[in-house]
Image (cartoon, helix red, strand yellow):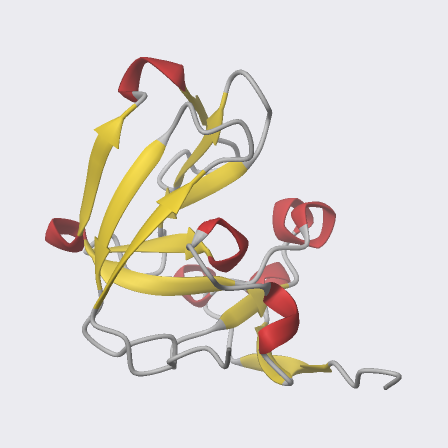
Length: 141
C-alpha cells in the first residue's frame, strides 16, 4: 500500500514499542530531509517535521533518553531500551520537532525516492547551511 505523503496524523513508536507517539503534521511527509552534521551522518535517519504541539508522547516518556552536544540547543531523544532515535527538537527551528520517519506507522525511509540533505556541518545558526545535496533511492526491482 502506497504511503500517503499528505497524511495529517499518524502514530509512531520505537523498535521495542516502549515509546509511543501521536503526530499531527502541518505538511504531511513533504518535509522529509536528512542532514550531514556529525550526529545525523552516523544516525542516518530521514526526518519529517511536526510543530511542537504536533507531537504527543502517549507512553514511554520515562523510557526516553536525551542526547545533546555542541551548543546543547537541539534535543535528541531516543529509547533507552532499544536505542532507536525517535525525534529531536531542532536547533535551526526550536518550534519544530524532527521525527524519525522510520518510526511512523506504515512508513519506511525507502518510501522516499529522493530526500534533500541539509548542510548541517555548516549550520544556519553558525552562518552557513543550505542544501548539501540529495539522497536518492532506486529499488533494484
